[in-house]
Image (cartoon, rainbow, N blue to C red; front, side):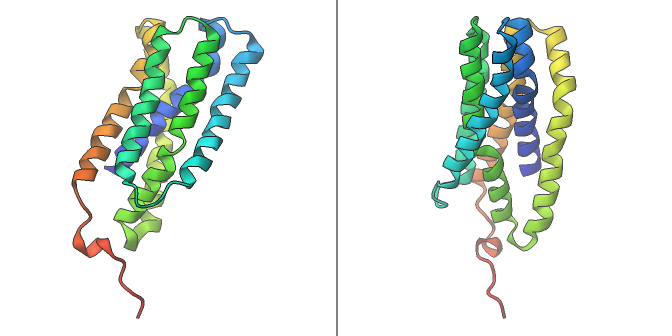
Length: 187
């Protein structure tokens, strides 16, 4: 389940990161420089968000935080439907960077916590599957741009986040097996 969660999250994140510039410049007619700044704004806010999420206490439920961050990111993508000015759209893209920032490390932490005896292996698999979301984003966005009204492209690209939210909340219902709740002491 964490592999599907991270794939869906990376898919939606990549759609924003790869197409914000195009959307702002070609669709909303933002000046080219500002469309390029959108990428900097997205990744700059991503960095700020990662620093902020690093300070979260570990006792907070990773599952619920991931669900909350994915919902907030999906909300910022949904807001693109109503944006008619490039500056408002740019702000939504920057907000995406901020709220998406914690999802990746929290999904990795969640997976490591659930698999303490194999954390290196499962994190390697998790990261590999997550990176496939980057590969799937361009064909998905091209399809959405061909088939949907432009104002619905980013809200539709947020749909994978619904899968992430559902699965991560399902994981929250499933406590760690007793054998995995504590790491055995070294002999």
